Length: 456
Length: 108
Image (cartoon, rainbow over all chains, first blue to last red):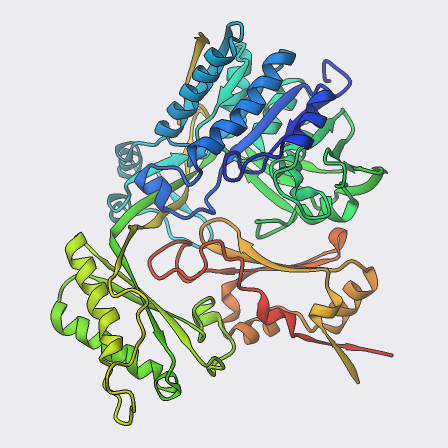
């Protein structure tokens, strides 16, 4: 049984720092004095590059802005603040950056001393290699095969998705502020509820519904605060923005968001089953949820791993085509340009992609519209190679040869493409998700490196 | 028989990444009637989606009729993980438009 009748958690943003938290609804929520301020700051939506290159996708100033709001409100009230997946990827460098931001903000505001806990979730490649060589299967998710050493070798950086365990441990240590490495979104909210004695099923549901902040409310508006309330028997979710409401439709609908299945949510330690959830309109702005179940894992806890590996250096070229004859023969044009790259780099390792906007630039092979209906095309060329010089040359040939395309009946013999800039542009290096797997562990803290310090 | 397009019947039609290897599609109705109509007409099935997107049915890894939200939801496996070389839609959020024109028989 819980030690208090209810626990209230404010979530200000579905991805801290990715776009700034809206302040009006945040302060309206803060006035009601929630018991915790919790927020997720990460996502794999941003693609593999930030994890691979160990950078953030969010601007530093926005991350600082959002952390400052939460720190001011939580310190003023003397309640804990919890962040998961620091700095988009949750790597060590991002956790360290957030710890330094908190330290600086505490000094600027002159807050009395408090405890700051933080944990790292980076996974050493050699740790996994040892496990694999000792016969441990690193099982693939979403139809992937088990991890091979070859895939592991292609990986630059790996993080493990934490469950509730390091957050509960940090709260046990008396932490006032927690900065987490990579974490499942829901556990950031579930951890304080479970620690306070609420049922696991409702606690994980609370996390599931809160993690994207105002995305569970309507009308659609992001970055607005919502408050989740848990009791021994239910979860209630309330929109803080004056014009938003949490309705049965918006809350039930949210369970499907970004998940392949609306009924099941997997975390380190088990699975939240939402099949029998009942949704009721509790008041104007609040929906009440009952009936979720939690199924603990049988056997060892499996922790999800995310890994990213560099593919190569990358350049981008852009060309326009207006001649209707060239448009109708665009596949021939691309074939020509590709052949010119191949002629120069035959046998070398490179990748070359053409995105033809006006044809299928957005959907690629999934595009059902096969005929070109546009009077002009934009062609974006993506060239990838081991070195910067080679990537530049590949992209340059691949782009410029659109201009020199050899079509038998073309009228415009002075050039078959329009360039708004006659150069190719260096892009960030290309990465790919090399790991989307799970590793079995004996102790859920095995992959979390937890620290607790006094600030100042 | 009269038909209406899905865009006229559904409140929300969207697509979005579900993790690194999948794109998930949500078709959400405001009215229960419209949801039930589309469901019972079987115009949106694994087979019809596979045909529309010209992919083998095996690439549709989840197909759910989700009554609490009056929603039909399906998920397809990406050909390569999100953001890999050659990517055209890193968030997977512009893959739904072919659904807008699906024709649903309506009795009037």
